[in-house]
Length: 251
Length: 166
Image (cartoon, rainbow over all chains, first blue to last red; front, side, top):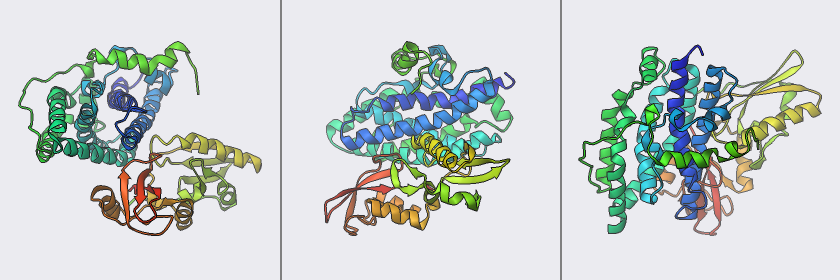
């Protein structure tokens, strides 16, 4: 492979959306209301659509005979480099929305910058995806406010979710080796520069939702290096089931 | 400003107009604005289409339908999916907007009005059944990625609103 860094860089972006898309897809038929169920699966579909563009590009860069599907479906757990936040389970609807919100704010900032990438394919995917992600961000922000500033019960559940997921936010701003190389080439986004504005935005919305901003300084990391939480194995088992059971099957 | 330039060979327009979006059968892909290029090179038609939403499952079907429609008229073709410039609802033609309304889907408003109805609950979307603007949003997400769910408070009919994408 000529451009290993670019390949890993693409996976770093794509895996987040694939894993989060899979999590949102789990709501299919299980959403708290029909409208919410449809919204979550719409979001999942957007994310999986974006992921296709990234993996098609990654397959082209890898140029080793693997297709977009092989890359998406047939890697081992340690080879997925999504952030830990994306793989956290749908404990209850507050967790689902809190996870999505904490990712959406980052995703929006990240794609806004990626539009300026010198790599025209990545810039094009970013421009396309950003339009969709602005809808996602509106949706999850709305729920943070509705549940946070809702009843005593909904407030407490949303606060629990934010408190628990907070430890996974810092990893969004860690740079991998591929990140550093791509930033140097004007292709990648310097995520360290997004951190301050990210927490400003998140904190402002939490305050508006009458939620407390967690004070814990303990942050968990590892996903970007392929070291995942125990939830990841279960998620992949379901994600990869068809390809593992019926290798090379197609629709 | 996004360029809205299309390169379509006039000979091919009538053929491409017979292909419709499988999820909105009344709307031809030409009126939808997803066909960006259709030119004949060395007796092969080269078509470029752009997706409305990244995950739009209709794109594969549209690609196959284009090939089939062209083949029926004796053309070999290649269909390519492009992402730049990104599709916007501005590319839906006036005829396309009318087709949507006739089919029962409210056509997209401008970006500011779109935000007003989706975020602030303003009543600006006209019910495609009875024409009232006494309508409310039920959900920002609808039956497909490109639509939101609305309900008319006068005739009580639920309907889809095609979200503004710009």
